[in-house]
Image 1 (cartoon, rainbow, N blue to C red):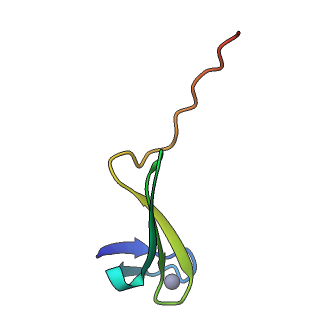
Image 2 (image 1 turned 135 degrees about the vertical axis):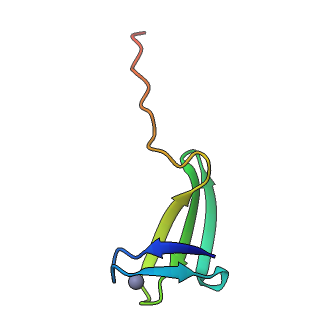
Length: 61
Ligand SMILES: [Zn+2]
């Protein structure tokens, strides 16, 4: 269970595991998909790697 500010209803609500529809591990962290109390679909990136991706400078070949 975690708190999340919905991008649709703008309310900060507690999200319960029963509302979670998917969890996906990506290179940017763990992406949790869930449905808000207002029925809006939301996603949240969590985990220790939840940070903007660092763009590596292009190397000349
Ligand atoms: Zn909502």
